[in-house]
Image 1: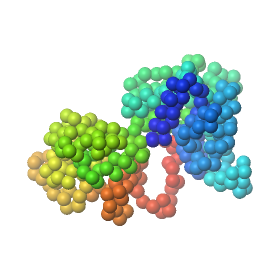
Image 2: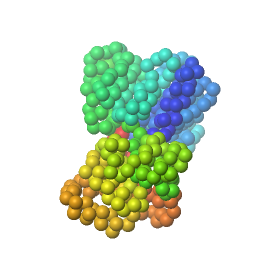
Image 3: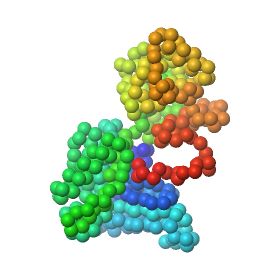
Image 4: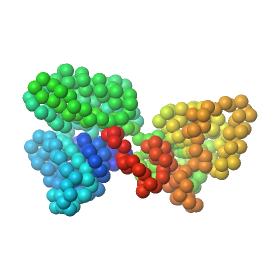
Length: 376
């Protein structure tokens, strides 16, 4: 997410300067690859590169091809096959045992840009779908690099001329929006066929931290490194300041009993409670546990969390299994953390694992592929 934010910012800067740039996007993969579909790299004629599409193996070759695309204006699909048993592939010695298809497009300040759409999704903190035609066969009215963009509110932007193909892609884009999972689809047409990458665009993870103590500082810092949208809430005026948390997106001064009025909590929100105040935690849990929050972590020993839940029950608050399952107390992965920085790492790592539906274990013990087989 942080990488995408940097790409969007760099494109906005280039656009304001009237510069033409190229964007390389992974649109399809098979086998073992370092990056997944949707990974991007922005390039300029001056040699600037923002983002990456591999571990450093493909970038130089893609950059050289991007210079051609910037000059010609013609999109280019490049296939990289690293399944060869030879040690040297293009003289790079990749050995990843996978195939990667990269679409390189020219972006000008005037044209319909997928990055403009991505910037709008990030700014609005909303989901969306970007459909990109990256491969065609035969004579069809849908050149490579044609896009359809679907916003969360149903607004559509497209430069597709084929009405039937546009309708089919739109129908699938709505399904991708609903399921929140990217996919590649092949569309048979009269006179040919088109292959399309339907990309589910994710807004930044919305992390709400309750408690502005010193131990919250590294949590905010690590979350921002991942490009998350961080909101910090505390009732102490001396603690809840932007000076203490300059990288936080929002710093809110609020009493625990008023948090439902000061911050939006939805099914995309993740929250961490670290006020170090038992009564404050009790009031915050009273609001958060029945809410649709996606993840809820609380700092402190397990017995303390159990006591908090017992008091809530005595207050007549009945919680479902699903609501209790979202509660993680003590918060964080078991990595032996005993400093604020290490504890912050364990907290952010656990949130990432939960969002990715992973256990947070050792990769060497994983029997399945590291990445899911879907293009998400």
